[in-house]
Amino acid sequence: MCGAPGSGKGTQRDRIVEKYHLAHLSTGDLLRQEIATGSELGKLLDSFISKGNLVPDDVIIDILAKHIDSLDADCAGVIFDGFPRNVAQAEALEKMLAERNEATSVLLDLQVEHDELITRLLNRGKVQHRSDDNIDTIKQRLVVYEEKTRPVNDFYKNINKYQAVDGMGTMEEIFERIDSILKQF
Ligand code: AP5
Ligand code: MG
Image (spheres, rainbow, N blue to C red):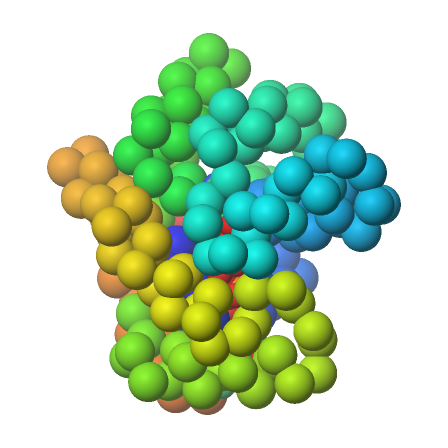
């Protein structure tokens, strides 16, 4: 599940997990859990996140390697939310799965207009107090998305695993669009 900050990745992931009984792995959630422990590693991670920059790839690949084999072996599949975040991570994911005789099925790209992204994130900032939901950091997250994450779409287009999803509208409408794609799998 890919898309810009605020595109609804986490929201739709929860719905997909509930309907299809998938395991899920969200690098953003795992990083925030580490920050919440107050550890030295957490402080280092927050120094990237609160500025809107990506955490270095080696840290992320380490997290992935640690969690991928502890996912429920009987689940129908796995949904990755907010990962891969750049082409190097996409390559690492594909390699790690191939080594386990597994493969990705599809990249869902949630497409949401720029102003709507900012509105959603500022609204969430009022209630959830994430260190990156302030206007300066949101702007930087959007720049990083364009530079680093958007090219991941081409990576999956090239291997015929890309599906765009209109991410504008109600959460229910968007879920129906995703559901009609996932039914094929
Ligand atoms: P991450 O946690 O992945 O955050 P993000 O990509 O910035 O996206 P968000 O979680 O903010 O938004 P979302 O798309 O999940 O939308 P949501 O459903 O919450 O990453 C955070 C940071 O961690 C990164 O900047 C980076 O520093 C680091 N990081 C994470 N993964 C990394 C990686 N792989 N490599 C390197 N660094 C990494 O929705 C947003 C809001 O809108 C919510 O309040 C929701 O209720 C609302 N909403 C959702 N849908 C709708 C709708 N249809 N209409 C109205 N409101 C809606
Ligand atoms: Mg999220």
